[in-house]
Structure formats: C-alpha cells, structure tokens
Image 1 (cartoon, one colour):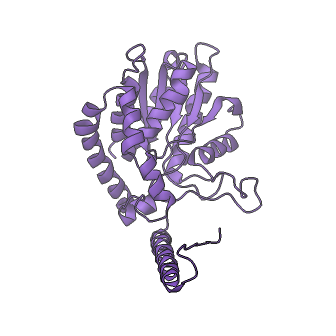
Image 2: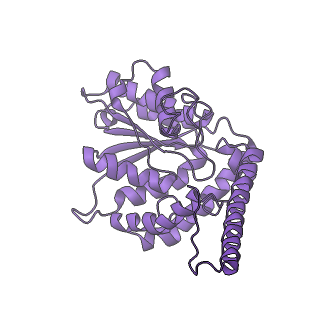
Length: 314
C-alpha cells in the first residue's frame, strides 16, 4: 500500500499526551467471520491494533482515563451473515453472528487485559456510511466522545476517512458541528490476495469519488444523512428491505467475484443461493397464479352461487 502501518501504530501508542485525551477507538468491520470468534485476518489486524492502543493508554497515558473500544458492523450488503451454530442460544429465532460481535470476541479472547466493560458493539450498520452514522448517533453523541481514533485496513482507509469526516463533521441541527477530533490508523492488508485487494480498492476509490461529488453536497447535515439512509439505501429504506425480505435477489448488490471472496463469501454458494431465491420467488408467483386461475374457472362453471370463496392454507 506504500504506507508504513507499523510506524503509524508506534506513533499513536508512543504519544502519551494524545492517549490521555482519547475517548474511543473505533474498529471497522469488514467481512463475514468464519466462526463467532474468528473474523477475517485483516479485521483481526484492526482488533490487534485497537488492543495495542488501549493497553498503551492505560499503561502510559497521562491520566487514569480508559478509552472505549467500539467494534462496528452487523454485516455486509454483499453476502448473508454467518448463522449461529446449531445448539447455540441464538439458533432458534435469535440473531446471526454479527461482524462486530466476532471482532469483540476475538479482541477479548486474545487480550485478557482489555476490560470487557470497555468494549462496545454496534449491530445496526451494513456499510461504511451507516458504520459512521450509527457510531456517532448511537454512541459518540450520547456518550460525549470528542477524541476518536478510527482503525481500518489500508485498502479501506481513504474512503473511510472521507465518510467519517463527513458524518462526524455534519451539523446535527441542535448545536452545529459536534466538535469531534478524528485520527486515523491504517492496518496492513493481510489475508487477501492481490486480486482481492485490487478489486476492493477499485470499488473503494469509485465509491469515494461518488461520495465526494454527489452525496456530501446533497446530504450535508446529520438529518439529511438519515433521510438518505431511510429513503435511498437498500438496507434501511422500507422498499429496499421489503425487496430483500421477498428473496427476489433485487435487494442484493451485484459485485465482482473477487469482492465477494474478500468479504468472506463463497462465490459458488452465494450465486447458487441467489439463484435459488429468485427461482423460489418465481415458483411462488406461478403457483399463486395457477391457484387463482383454477378458482376463477371453477367459479364460472358453478351455477350454485355467484360468489367464489378461495381458501388458502396458511
């Protein structure tokens, strides 16, 4: 990437004055975990960096203040979440394995000195814009954070910086800007092939340019961002969520195979799943049409009553 991530991490953990004012460390999610405690390798790197900064703050900071660690993301729009394992408390009607909970589980398992009470999880967002939005409105604004360190992979950093600067700098309508001071820490792009990094970086660059040119000018205030999410975003608008719930495949974003792999997806499985969903939806429509047609013609042949009653099994 041309960035010396180790040097940047050392700069942060050796800055005692900065650490003493640090309110929170935000760790972005980035792909489906392979188990409830096993996020992708590049996300583990983000968690390791967060733990390093946290421990440096409690060991070498100029105050007794401990920063919170906020792990982000429910999942991604590109592939389905990992289901809870059979027999777990969440396997019957419970939530899936969220990216943020897998990050938190890994972080706490690997770092016993990190207090569990200082680790928070955000389970609402499905992309970087909503990462930033819900990190601010559900945590930062409520808890009074001001100095925040944002950690993500190098391939993801440029776009993340654009988005977090936009969302955390957006006036809220109550008191203007919230006065956040953001610092960014990139981590190495480990665990991905050259092709997967290229595919992700290409998407990141195009999306970042679109955000700068179109979204930021159109949605400058925090309320405008909420309007964008609830009216134009497939994961937050009623229309988009209904499409996904109907399993037509229309609510799923179409991405390059390398991008699917980079999010932890299996290309053959995801493609088959999407096709099966579309086929099932088409079959359901066909069966419904056949039932309605049969009932209509049966009603025309019946002379006993002009009324037609159609009873469908629940």
